[in-house]
Amino acid sequence: MERFDRLYALYDEFDTETLRAYQDFVDLFPPVDSRVALEYWESASDELVERKDDVRAAFPEGETFAGLAARATREQAFAALDLQAKYGCAVNVLVLDVDETLRSAGHTDNEIPRETLHLLTEFHEADVPIVICTGQTLENVKGFLIQGLGNELVHSGSVSVVYEAGTGVFTPGHGPDTKQLLYEDLDQDVRGVFDDLRARILSDAPEGIRQGCHLQGNEFNVTLKPNFETGSDRARDLIDDALRYELDLLADCVGGATREHVRAFYAAADPEIAGVLADAGDLPDAVADEATGGDSADALAFIPEGVRGVLERVDVAYYEADAAEVASRELNKVVGVQAAFDVLGVDDPFALVMGDSKSDLRVMEWVADEDAGIAAAPEHASGRVLDHVRETDDLVFDEGAADEVLRTAWALNRLAEQ
Image (cartoon, rainbow, N blue to C red):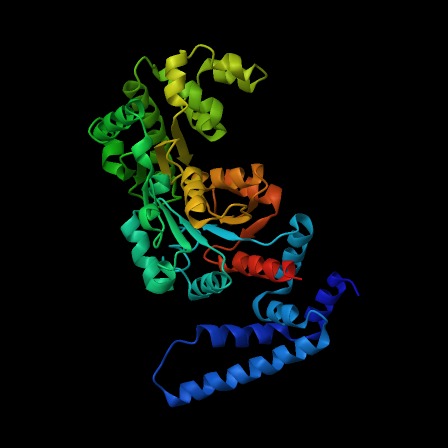
C-alpha cells in the first residue's frame, strides 16, 4: 500500500478528531492545584495512549502515523505529504514574524495563542532552531518570548531574535556573537539621509498628516502609522497622503535628487506605489510610458547615477491603510536572518518563513531563490505576500491561527524521517 493510501486509511478509519482533542487537552492543560483536575488529566492521558497504540498497531509506520493523527488534520497531513514529495526534506529552522502572524490584534487579543506556543516548544525539543523576525524592539520581543516560551528555552542557544526589522540580531548563549549591531556597518551617506528624514518627518509634515499619523520605527526605519482604525477609509486616504509626503521629503534629503527622480524610482519598483501616485496625478510620465509598453531602463535613465546609487540603498514600502515606511535596504530582515543563521550554525537551511508584510516577503523570496525553504502567510497579509505564497505552496492560514501551518510543518518533518 502506497503512503498516500495508508494516510487516507488513517483518517478514514480512525477518529483522529477525538485523538487530536485528547492530545491538545493533555498538552495545554494548565497547571492547577486540584486533585480532581489532575485525575481528569491522567484519565485523558491514558485514553490518548490507548488511541495512539491502536494507530501504531495498524500501520508499518505506526509511530509516525500516531503522531500525525494526534497533531494534524487530514488537510494538514496531506499538505505535508505533498511538500515532502516536492522538496524531499524537513524544515530545519523556523523564521517567524510576530505581529499579525503569530498573534493578531483582531482574533487573539494580541497574544500568541497557547496552541502556537506549545508547537514552538515541540519544534525546539526536536532541535529545530527558531528565528523570531520582527520590527519590534529587542526588549519588547524578549519580554513576551520569555513569558510565553520560558526563560530556559529562550536562552537555550537555539533561539535568535532579528529585531527592528534587521537593525540587530540577539542570540543568547553565543558569547561575543550574542548581540550583533548590524547598523554599525552602515556608512555615513545613508546615515545622513535617515538623520535628516527622521528629524523632519513630523515637523515638516502637512497638518493633516502631523495630526493624523504617529511615528514608529528606529533611526534607520521611518514609518508613519494612522491614528485611525487600520483598514478604514480614513486610514487609507491618510496613508496615501503620507506615502506621497515621505517620497517628497526623501527627495529633499538626498543630495541632487528631485521629487520627479524619487517618485519615478519607487513607482517603477512597486506597482502599489505607482497606483497611489497615479490616483493623485503624480505619476511621472516616464513611468506611465513604461507601464504602457516602454522600456523600464529608459524610464529611469533621467535619474543621475549618484542619486540612483543612494535610492538603491533606501527602501520605501506602502501598506494600504496601514503604514508608509522608509527604511535602509542594508538593514532588513534578510540580512538579519542570514546573520542569525550564521550564529545558530544553520549551514544548509530549509526554513519555514511565516509573515504578513513586504519586509517578510523579502525573506520569503530569498529562501525561494536559494531553494532554502517554504513560505506561509495569514489570509489578511499584504497582497504581494499572498500572491507569492499562493504561487508557491499555498500555505495560507486563518487570522490568528499560525498553528495551522506549524502543524503542517510538524507533519512534514515526521514524514521526512521515514
